[in-house]
Image: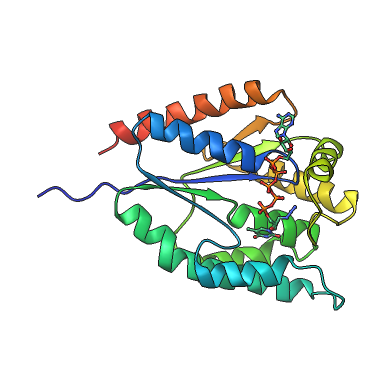
Length: 216
Ligand code: Z5A
């Protein structure tokens, strides 16, 4: 009997207003048309308990949240998500399509909140052991464009309401991480018209599908 081939772990990332929701829907449809079985999920969240933690993390409130509390809550939600969703999905041979993962923590808590890389790295090893995404797709756009789009779309949450300098640090951190490991990251220009963004996303997905199908 042959062992079940593990599904791919693909993460979609980017700063505010870059079009993650829109493009996550495109990716789901694309994979369906290609006959790839997947499960779509998101962070913070992805299980009932992790979604409860998401509400706590993102809700605006009078008491300011200590950056370290924010960091630990994000990883608490992640621990639950990994054990109850991400690993079971991949072990069943399905792809796990995740809207944000630990690169968001490096970008928002490590850089945006100035907690630094080493604390996030320590928690990453502790909580995730060897688990890392097979591919991280970063939708990238200048922060002014992202902010305009996010404002036009809906009310801003606690993170989205941060100053532009915060969002610039987030963007810089994403790009720096991608530059350090170009074989695992794909940066897509999200300032382009949507149809061009999606042509580029489709190319990335085709490459991942080919590699996965040809890999024993
Ligand atoms: N967070 C964290 O701090 N630490 C962590 O470890 C993790 C997360 C995992 C929630 O994330 C927050 O959690 C996030 C970081 C924090 N806060 N922020 N900022 P989320 O992913 O759930 O929320 P989000 O960042 O707001 O993403 P979103 O809901 O996917 O929004 P979006 O990127 O803005 O996507 P959109 O709604 O599809 O696009 C916005 C608008 O732009 C919309 O009207 C589109 O039609 C339009 N759009 C999209 N693409 C284009 C193009 N190419 N041209 C023109 N218009 C476009």
